[in-house]
Length: 468
Ligand SMILES: Nc1ncnc2c1ncn2[C@@H]1O[C@H](COP(=O)(O)OP(=O)(O)OP(=O)(O)O)[C@@H](O)[C@H]1O
Ligand SMILES: [Mg+2]
Ligand SMILES: [Zn+2]
View 1 (cartoon, rainbow, N blue to C red):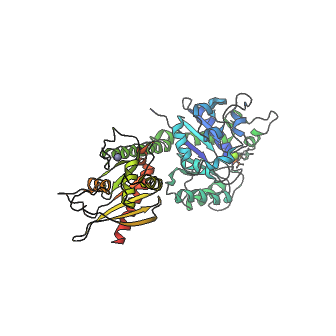
View 2: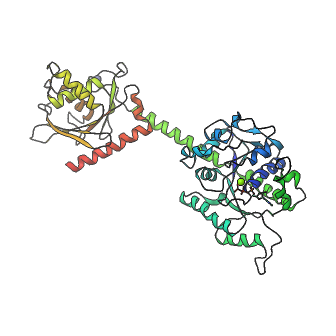
View 3: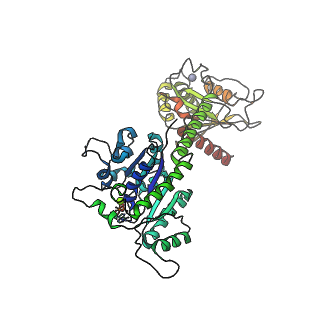
């Protein structure tokens, strides 16, 4: 079974609201209250609080850090075992250039899903909503937003707006009143800071945790001491109110963890795998219907697999397959210049045609008007679908099923690809011939490349409809 982490992100645009204190201490409490649960913490900030708190020995610059994780390093390489049994990833000062890699909002979710990290991951973010923070928000099963006053409560709306913009369920988001000074009392129904903050939050439709965190001089003092360390609340501030508040928050979170069957990472990963599988399936289906022969020379492609430089598809998608580069350029040379293979200029013309054909799509539509002489509407388009050439080519004898030497290859292709009942062609049908990479012709049927073909086929259908 693949392991997926339950992810908790601590975020607020406001600085100094207690994010890092919450992230680091939560990791310790979670580990203490559930020893067998792996807990991993890391930060997108560059003030190294996490390193100071958790590292067992002095910093070794060779050990990979958060930057390495974001560049795709394996979890087993980046997660260090730290103090109190908490796993941590070293902080980095080099996250500025990472933003390029993180254009998409779900990159971190994917990384966490593929990382093999299990248990709980806690992400401490910077006081902004840059793309890394956004990634951390979308990856989270639970987002804790510390608010300490009205301005920080104001700021929350940007996080909620981000979720709205992407249409993501906001049920993961929860505010938590932090740095609450219990000495401050108000008259009236909002008797203190936390009651006031909670009332305003609820009024705005924000979910607020039942717990809160008090402001405590003892807690504040934990990161100011002669040995330059940062001490945890659990070990060094047990006598405070904040200790029991952390216990309560941790219990609450563990209940959520236990109640969560499929984490965000798991759901996203399952979705990705399904998408991959269906891509693969459509690719295999596309491979399946291909013509076995080159419709121009008639050779079995399995026997003559080299030089499969073109892919053709008919308007109704009934016939599709690869054609030899040599066959296509000879056919076009005769079609466009009425040259036969034994003409002295044939080879030179063929080279020119081949060069052009490698960059363009040819559209071939037979025009068989009753009583009129058969013609071919030949068009060339560039790969973005702009028409570059149109030529009507006489096709003497085509309707009678005769060959005339010059157009033999063309007639063969049209008959093979567009044949309908009793020697007639399928009505209004046409075919397009696309250049492909002869080294790997099948790659044209891969999801991304095939999208282009699909789009162009539709575009050609419209172009033809307009001109008739
Ligand atoms: N419960 C508390 N009681 C008193 N002081 C606290 C408490 N929690 C945090 N502090 C202090 O408040 C300051 C800011 O806390 P912290 O660094 O956790 O906030 P932050 O939101 O991570 O800040 P930044 O946005 O700069 O990353 C620190 O000096 C910390 O010691
Ligand atoms: Mg911080
Ligand atoms: Zn051929």
